[in-house]
Every structure is written in C-alpha cells, then in structure tokens.
Amino acid sequence: MTQDPRDSKIRRLQDSKIPRPPAVRNRGPQVGRGGVTPGSGLSTRDLLKRLGVRARKGLGQHFLVDEEVLAEILKAAELAPDDLVVEIGPGLGILTEALARRCGRVVAVELDERMAGLLKQKLAGHANVEIIQGNILAMPPEVLVGPDERASRGVACSRSGLRSGGGVYKVVANLPYYITSPVLRHFLEAGLKPRLMVIMVQKEVAEVITAGPGDMSLLSVSVQFYGRPSIVRVIPPESFYPPPKVESAIVRIEVREDPAIAVDDIACFFRLVSAGFKNKRKQVHNALERGFDLDREQIVARLEGAGIDARRRAQTLSLEEWGRLYEAFKEIVRQRPVKQRPVRQGPVKQRPVKQSEQSGSRQPAAGEGRNSITR
Image 1 (cartoon, rainbow, N blue to C red):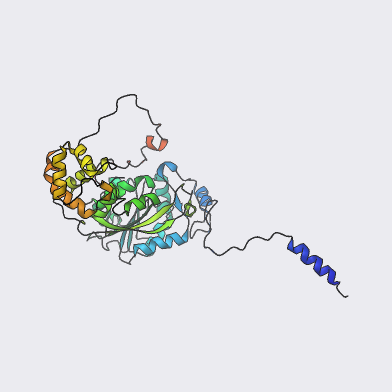
Image 2: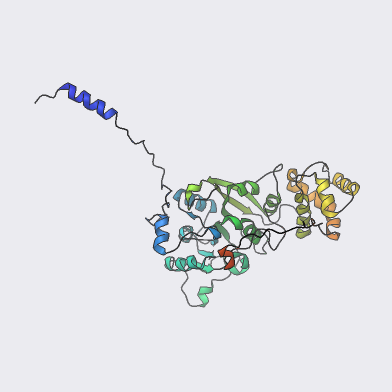
C-alpha cells in the first residue's frame, strides 16, 4: 500500500510540537534529594533511614555524597601505603573507607556515639582502621598517633605500627564548620604536628586562612605561621547531604618544620598579634596603644624603628612585618597584659540551650582554651 506523503508531513508537524527533554551531559554522580552515597548504591537519605539515624545539625553533620570531590581530597592528601592518617568526624565512613584502601593506618575520631557504633560495624573488615568515639579536642595528637591500642588487646591489625613510632602523620577530614578554628589550633600548636592537613571547611573561612597582606586576620597569621595553606577547590552545597547553606572548600596545609618567622616566645608573639587585630579597623598605632595602654609617642617610635608606617592597619601587615614588630615590642608585651575591653553593663540576653549542648555532645566553641588560632 502506497503511503500518502501528506501523512508523513502531518506526523512531522505533530512531533515538532512535543516538548523534548533537554540533553543531559554525564556529570558523574548526581547529588540532591538525599544524594548518592559513593559505593553504597543507596541515596544517603535512604542509607541513614536504613541505619535508623539522621543528620544532626547541632553537630554540623553534612555527609559528602560526591565522588569527584572525594577523589579530589584523596589526590590532595598524596597518600602512600605506609601513611598514618587521622580523620575527624568520619560520619558514614565514605572518606574513611577510601583512606583505608590507600594508606597503612587510619585513626578516625567521631563525636556522635551512634555514628561511631555504626562505623565500627561497617568497617570491621578493615584491619587498619581504628574508630574512636570522643571529642577530638580532648585527645592529644601524641596519644592518637601512638601504637595501635588494638594490638595490645590481641586484635589483628595489619600495618598498625607503620610510621606510628616516628610520629609522622597526616590529618584528612571533612570538618564540622563550627570547630574549624579549634581543630586547627589543636593540631598546629601541638607538640607533635601533622606533616600535612587536607580539610574541608567553609569557603569564607578558606579564603581567610589563605589571605595575603591587605586581607590578613588573626586566623590567617596563625595558620600561615605554622604552615603553607592553599585552596584546592571550591565545593558547592549540593555535594553534601543535607546540603549546607554555604559553599565549602578543600584546603591543603603543608605544615612547616619550623615556624615561618623565628620568635623566642610564641605565646608572647600571638599576644601582640591579637592586640593588633582586636581593633583591626584602627591604625596599628591606635590598636597597640589601646591593647597595651601605652602612650602614642612610644608606640610610634617603636613602629618607626621596625620600619612600619604607624598609619597602616593590622590586616595589611605580612608575616615578616609581624616578626619585626614583635622584636620591637616584645619587652613591652612581656611586661604588660593585654588590656581587656570593659564589660558592658545591663541585662544579659540568654541564648536558648540546644539539646545537643545539654547532653554534652557539642564541641567547645572557637576561641575557648587558648589565644592563638581563632577566627
């Protein structure tokens, strides 16, 4: 039977009116609506549901669900078969499992008791992984990277002694945002520092950490005093479940064997830096005058002796200039305590206490305990 050419024309016209879905490029694992947990075949939401747990905002839990980002973290860490790695906040163990396949020993510290129990079950087949439930800020690195405690309990642990005796280790972690500064302080100020840190942090904090003169802060001076930080990659919220409200970034910190500048009293040096940034919008002579209750003439004279214009602001000073400033002011800083701001009188507005804080599960806030690395 001969086909009427008009039929094919009508069919083409009808087809042209049907909306077609846009072409989709292969972008790897698609994230959203719970994400895809790498290697699980399940969405992160479904996996959490199956395990009977859910992300706890009070602990800053945002689980990584993007395999490309996972690969980027592993690449930045430059892992070797005999590496010892400390991970903070392993969550569902996605990064932990990948680390275990590439290095000699992994010590993962998880604050959430439920999650730590699940991780021990999930990673039981990896003899080189140790899950510790507790607060990372209460655990000295010297203890964490010591000989594997499981060996003394008769538990098989392949490669458990690798690099642990010499104390050489790396920190690789997707950090809860609110403990970024305390964790940096905990490891960079420790007697036994890591050789390398690869951490996921809030993008804004990553930019502060890696800032140069003109945008420096107490945090950037503190981190750069101990290491060489760089931003590896900016990560969108959709790479996590649940997605955070801000962008993240992978930061790599190559920890120096010796501080960037030679000072004879690190605590005294950071008292000076803290005084300079306490009133960072003011010129440096005003900030130091207020910080140490000195007269202007004395401040200006010492600044000129250090080759620093008294009208500059703290955020414009380089590490080398802070070193010169310390040499000019160290005698004064040692003798005089930093002047505290007066306490404002009046009614105090009480902040509601979260359930996670009542149960004692919240990590200490930034700035508690020491006075060096802080936001």
